[in-house]
Image (cartoon, rainbow, N blue to C red; front, side, top):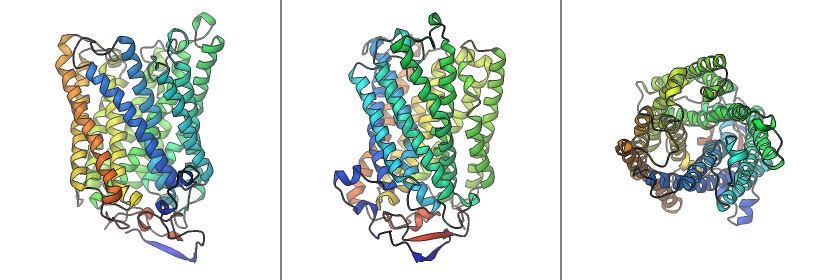
Length: 538
């Protein structure tokens, strides 16, 4: 157990009631400034978007069972994969861990009563919701056919779809990211409990802190880029259109300057979750804590200097391509350090294979495959062959779905007793975790083979030679859907019928486990004082 000494002065503002008993009226939830309730608001919202985006993916996989495009027209298929990408990237993957688990846990992990700016925290959820409304409006208006990247000239000249509505939705949701990032940074700097030094911060806090820095520094670039699209599309100002004196490559540079750091917005919090789970379920301190912290910050830094590897075949300078290739190989180093340290933490550990640990070990396998295949795409010559093929699709999904989504599910299962005070069915949770692992590999591994064989992505019809691999991929998507639906069922069931969890069912370390489950409204009835590191497992 983490050693915590409480001060003699009781916090008179904290109440003994848990945050779930503070009123169930809609008004009490919509006007709450409790970071835990705001985390739940985010969780409900992103879950809805997740299943919305997943439905689009399932329709695509059904289309791709047969070589002929016999379910959807080319235009409908374009709108479908654009919708899937926009919803899953901007409205699920980016906010998934920071806005839910990060919002709930970060103040407790540093010993704070709430976020530094509680009202700003609530505003961030309203801004997120407003952005989602514009995106849904784009779907109602006929959808978007530009892909999730909004590449010009498709988004400025050729598209007759609801580009502006979707772009406005993403533009708005960017401000939600900025507000969340600002709150995380200030909370971490100014609200740590006595004794909670930088060297005693849990790696989950470090990961969300680094993510917050990326949110604050990179997101304004995306918002300005989308604003420029709107200006060119509505006013005819020559920014990206060569006929008006613009440069279409400028859009790609601006977009990827944000969007590659955004990859680490999605994956760094996942790394923090996995660190907490592996330490707990191996009963070992994290191996090389300082190295893990430095690698987290290095990944955040290197994310800003590798955007050009998305543009090797776009016409950018060959010399720039060589530099971006080198930096991309370099960014693999801190990721490899983390993987090595997780493996070393497992060494000689007393490992228990509960559902959170299965999700964490799945993350290790999937993230390793995704990372190694990223090295293929970082090589200039190989990327010429693999660019815009299913190999890129498989690599991206091994990192994003295999990494970010798997870690989110692992974190949700790990901290569910703390969030709700209830346990779930461990048998069903293990089944869901294994279904997710099997489904992910069966869905996306065949796509590496498809891409290497030369099949381009975003095509709704294909030669007969690729049909077996496409059928296997669609079969995997069905197994994957089962891995997503099962937790929705048994976690919902546990809210009322699950056995009471107690404050620390996993015998885990960390300040969040020293509070009742669910936690009090203000987290701690007295100000905690920390006198040892976050992973004091014996």
